[in-house]
Image (cartoon, rainbow, N blue to C red):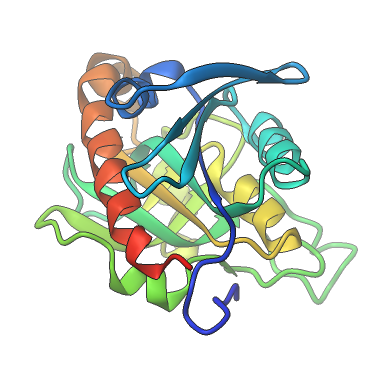
Length: 240
């Protein structure tokens, strides 16, 4: 579990990452930003009302893209990253969730990772050296999450395929499934940096998911990016 020292957030930079540009457009366009490059990675740099530097970056779809981008920024000497936020969409696996609900991930599992046949101490989904459920959201940050009647906090699972048979993943007891967050969580554990994922539910990860997601993706992304703004402001009270 990642913990805050003395209950406070360290660092001077916040990193927001999405897989697709539309998932971060509203978040970035609401603030004045400067377009920059970190090697092959393009990103937007701006300041929030408190003066903290904020990076908005579109990493591309999938776990490798997500992990590579997170590691590039977390290891860069110019940026002392305070925490990382994954913003985007997800399929709902908890039957109580409905389209448009917000899910915040406090712990993460890579559902398509399995070395249990050769590492018997590891369960399916468990990375050697990590807990099965990678807990990356410190309780102090969870405690100040903005209240919302459509908000749920819990487990998000990730894998490198679009899920339309979500019932097969019920063993992890997840709220939602997507394709990037658990990989970023693993990187953030390596760098001892708090991480959360803010996702809006676009579908039920069932046989209709491939039809539902394209219809609702752009419209509903405004919900997750809006909540990301609210979370950024809320977490400022833990800075310094």
